[in-house]
Image (cartoon, rainbow, N blue to C red; front, side, top):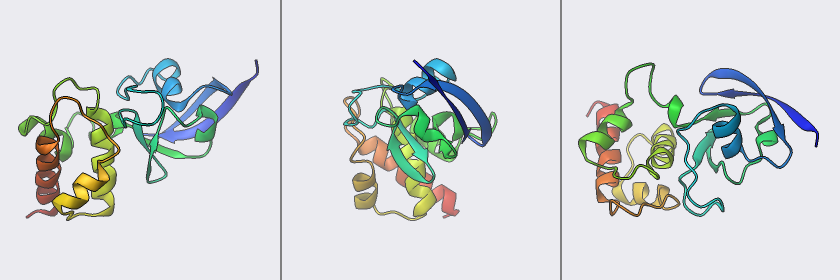
Length: 158
């Protein structure tokens, strides 16, 4: 089977890889690029655990083919922190105990960051709506929503 050569930007770094035409972006991230932060929850685009940001929009990496990354700008959970310093969202998830098993956390963080990049002052309803595609079986969502709202407040300097 022929492999596709892909040139893209992932977490502000130029990246090149070869992938099979049927290989998902999730599989490319984990198997080819050894970026283990993005998790597989369902493999059908229903849970949000594999959420990445592609050209400013959320995408389920389990539904995106690796070849589709050609020329795109992608951010994964590994790209949220600044060097060795946690992003405000990551710190707030820890402070508010907004994580337990960790399967949904990477997707939640990417979705929340995508929201806060677009809306610096979301309401609770907007946060809940924005994260609706990311399922969590452990926390009950309240701590996650509180963490996102607290992060937004700190990021605004309020």
